[in-house]
Length: 278
Image 1: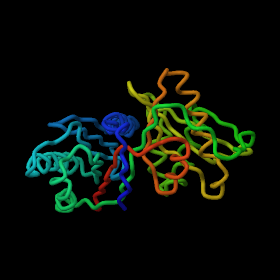
Image 2 (image 1 turned 90 degrees about the vertical axis):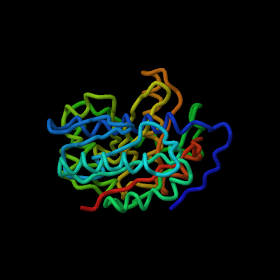
Image 3 (image 1 turned 45 degrees about the vertical axis):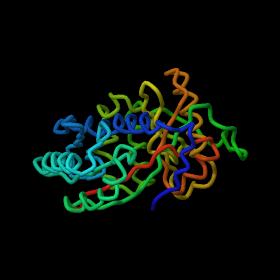
């Protein structure tokens, strides 16, 4: 699905902090295991989690490509394919569409299909450089207790809730999110509890010009109550106070898009995500 791209003039160039922050977040997946790796090669960031699980093994461009023939892009895709093949890991390519000229962008799906990757989603990258808009409805703030991910219990709850929210294998989430060393980098996590039960998660990654919000989700039976919005507002208030950073970014799912728009976020770019099948 391709999202509408209004991109008003005020958002010109905002794809840069969005994609930089996403690259920083991706490095989280290389912290949990000693056999993981982060490498930078010829305009690419390559992140291996050390697990054969394509969403957590990523290749991303680190700079725009101006070549109109597709030669530079295919060369970089081959570098990524060889890197992950040597590690015997399935992988993913996360493309900020503003980094490619339109003539190459129209061909990128074929380039990736030839390397065994298929498109899975087209999330918009959204940007907000002011405080959040006031809530559009009353929020049941008193129903939730919110805790920072700082110990074994909160790591376990973040892991289990993320697996449920995003339909991920529990074993993979435990490998990544339960490891204490995973949280030694720039990503910070929060868990929202209802009557002691973990019901929602949110993570935040600071870069010099924005705070990136990730893994925003609520377990199915607690959705449509405003819990994700409560948690987001708490995270941004707390983390902005700590870092002094106000602008924030995120990548949206179709379900979350209306809520984020009401909170003030506007689409500034679009990503294409491709996953290897074998």
